Amino acid sequence: MASELAEVCYDTQIEPSLLSTRGRDLPEGTITEEGARLDISSRNFWSTMDRAFFDVRVFNALAPSNLGQGIQETYRSKESEKKTAYLHRVLEVEGAIFTPLVMATTGGIGKEFATVVSHLAELKAKKTGNSYSDCIRYIRLKLSFCMVRSITLSLRGYRGGVKTETTTCDIYNM
Picture 1 (cartoon, rainbow, N blue to C red):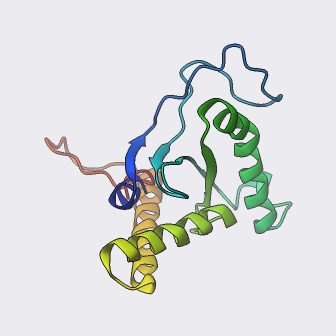
Picture 2 (picture 1 turned 90 degrees about the horizontal axis):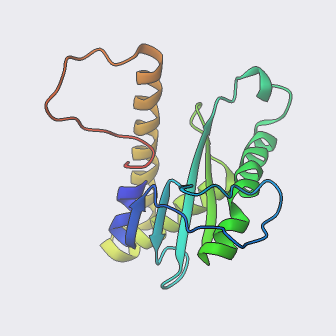
Picture 3 (picture 1 turned 45 degrees about the vertical axis):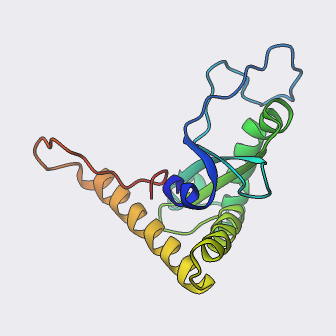
């Protein structure tokens, strides 16, 4: 995701450190620890010169703890958990915008993640001159392959020998 953001935004960073919350009165549940990090940040994503922070959450939709609720309700609850933890800190301390990126191991994505993917495709289409449909298809395909690769590695483990050069395809660098 970060590599796609870097193509259309400025100052894209993976795991940027957040500013100190000393002297701030933030709501209960907000993560206030020093050295806290979010997964991705970029400038010029939602609007010119605004900084946007993104935090990824991947959950198993078939886990016993998630079976008692519908899939859309599960996406909403996972997005809400991320917002409780980071939204006020990002808004008040960083002066930025926060968007949780929630997806299931089955390949589905939450409402806010879908909005990010759609907006990213619009920005990519505008910058590259390709059609919106080609751009969103490419982003979704890349995201799907990264998820399949991650799930495969987690299920079977890494079986290769020691490599001198490693290539990674994860949710941050798709």
